Image (cartoon, rainbow, N blue to C red; front, side, top):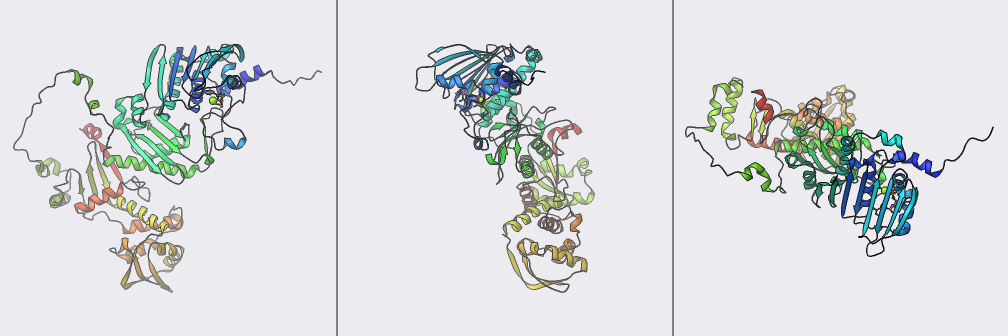
Length: 580
Ligand code: ADP
Ligand code: MG
């Protein structure tokens, strides 16, 4: 029997490998755009014909290539971007595998012309199915133009596999969007079948998003900005009202590279808990900056997959940052300083003659009468109605903004929604984050007591106390323990107005093993926040109410109490209108 194992000719192996990099026209566009970005271009023009099946051309004004570099750029594993394996782990450029041009040119007809800055002698090469068929000196502008025609002309099976022009163009636009959003410093022109469908000048990220997705997205963008030791997050989250039935508005960038990540999607999705209708997905443009040594992008040739060293922590950072920014927008409408006032007026209004507004004034109208209204009064119990009226003095100034009902909830209205906060749960959250901070930063202030407080502990309480005595200390408690008698001599400032015996009794009656807490500190902070919080039934004056609302929305996680209970509900204007 003759030997049967043989090495495939380069042409065949390139075609096979090409399948990994080039699946469809949009993958060609992605590779070409990434190369132009790596070449530090400031303007990129994209020309597409028949959804890229017949032509994908990218013209840039970047560094350009010498004649020799043009030749080697089509050879597999030829790259200018890394030199050795260590470079892969600190990769800053978009490409690095040196595979794209080799793959693309083996399955299409490529024409490349390029010229380096300040060098007049440009060059031109034409390659069909991986073979150079012509080349010449050519005078061109500085930069590079790569024309990819008749994709898969020599792999009919793949060509037949392409979807309709409509579908392929959708993929192409998706690639373009990702690149354009993450490179707002670059000017783009996108020409499809002879028509310029996008022209994007250099602009801020926000303006870039609006230029691509239209003016209607503007008021739905909530900025996110969070700097932590693990990663830096910035970008925009779309308001829940802008959620879609598909995931098409979900953009994630890690170190400015578009990536797909199930766990990041999940983390954001769960931050929207309770805010989305069934079957709807949130939208976002999230940029994550992270130390390149803490990620691995070399998972797949497509480079859209990514692995993080510390994905658990990243999950919770993203989760709470998104909750935080959603929470802030609920009470304070996003201020938009970049907004161009002319955008407020619709085109039809601009065109039509202004109409003189008609006013009808009811001189008998008394805005405060609402509280005496029978119908409204029935919504509240008799007792709470009394309270509202007695609180009336305090809240007159602010009553459209913040007031308390049933001695239990704080109601706050913003321009677009009504929010009802459970005062007890909100205060637990505020205290919990404050306690955790003091414990970790050892920043607690305490106050000596004139008369020490003595508490008799049961056996069980004593063993609990021994588990968490260092947490007591780090929060500013000072104490002595003789047998089962606890003598407290100093108290943390935060607790000086509370009834300490009850609080300590309460905390020590908890069962750490059943508490679901991550650590002793977490357990202690939770238990203490629960026992020392403002309770339901406590009447709060307007300053206290306002303080509570402001503090809540400066929390990292304003949505859930330390024991995972929902702190507030929101009724949007739409929700309210739908009730009637
Ligand atoms: P990679 O980008 O992974 O290095 P490619 O096959 O995409 O591999 O490109 C090979 C090389 O060709 C690049 O490393 C770069 O030096 C050069 N190159 C490709 N496109 C351009 C361009 N638009 N401008 C300048 N150089 C380019
Ligand atoms: Mg490349």
